[in-house]
Amino acid sequence: MKWDDRAGLAIGGGTMIGLGVGFFFLRMSPLYFVGCLLAGIGVGLAVAAIISSKGE
Image 1 (cartoon, helix red, strand yellow):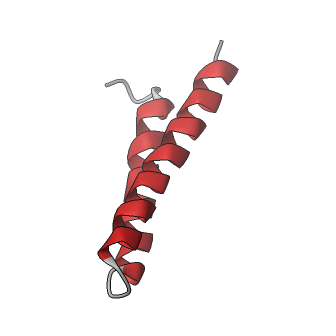
Image 2 (spheres, rainbow, N blue to C red; image 1 turned 90 degrees about the vertical axis):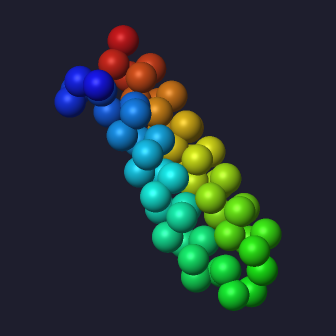
């Protein structure tokens, strides 16, 4: 992966943010943890799509 490829970093960053937020909700329900993780992946994919469209 090139260092100029910000889309891959956005997906990984969104996943890590979702994972961190999910740990706060883990005691309430494990499904909240999974939901936060999936939301983080979704946000990362959306940011990656925006970044890749601006690069063209």
